[in-house]
Length: 161
Length: 309
Image (cartoon, rainbow over all chains, first blue to last red; front, top):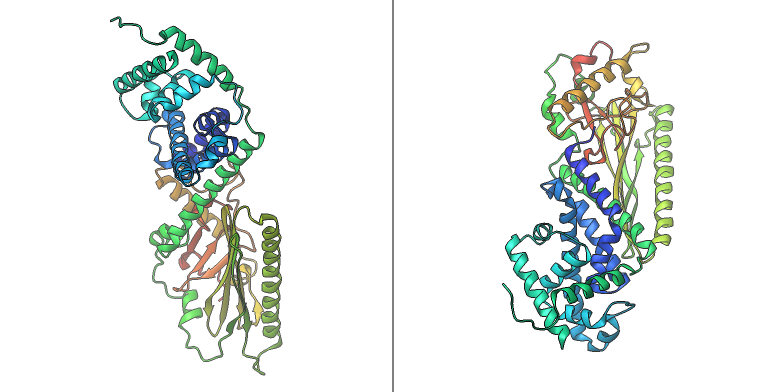
């Protein structure tokens, strides 16, 4: 009884609800604070539903949403960066709230380029396959491979110091 | 290809990353996050539906009217409601409608744009009592109805304060105002994340001076409900069949909802500019919200034997 478009919208909604934790963590990984991470996922979900008709292949719902979450995270980071430039003082407290993570590794990660950080995250924190990562980041597999290699290389050196 | 070892080994780094992942997975996830996302989803869904309707309206159409007008051009028959309602020279007085309350409100979060109409039959001495009553009755129902909506708006406003948005729009339109007939339509659009639109029609048959409902258009003891329902059901089926995206109209009991079960005695209707009878359904009554308020134009051929006039 449902049309194709309605059905697709329903699938997207389902995916969002079922994978909330995953998307929240992804957002949190970028912004490192609860309230921004919640905002990102909320905004991403809103856009995903609003634009549900533009998803071409329902098989890629997961990677498609992941990409939207990442874009929202980038947007927020850029916005925050602009504001931080204006008020340097807030910087220190904004960067880390609670953390059980290895600080050295975290710092080394933050020195990587954005797309390198993302690849490491998707590969090692979300356990994604390289072809999935390529689909999420919309670049070809060999580019992903070489970026991952480069990112790992940078981390090895940074952590040895 | 082996390279000279600089920095950590692959295994050491992967170990570190794995450990970090475990720590990261401990990140606690705020409980309200999921609910906030669900709210955002609901907002998007309703906004999408609202936009769709706005688009129809921009095109000068309300929901279904778009395609249906083209599908069911009325044959040029001998006697129609049109002749009775429209073509008679207007010799009598027309009702007047004035805006009694033009209410604008905007606090940055709640926005209202309300125009409340009041009907007047010109206070002519020769007007029959029943007509005065009918006019008074309509004015009273309009007032009660809009008061109720405004009250809800202000309750919401207090709750929303600096979070969320709502808007309310009430407008009216005189659809028919001839010697014989008067129809006022009151349209309410409430947007609160989602948009809901509903319309109320008020009719006065000036030849009797009475408030008119659907049954007054037809001869007593005729099966007009059956005839109209059968026709509309067929049109819905036809539309569903021709629609590449699958079924749009809900007919009978469906998997998700109770759809069209036949028209009701109090079904909304009006006469369009051609004098044809138009049957109107509420939003979500027989189709998903993005269809707006579906309308069906009834060909006069179908009902000319059973019309009351």
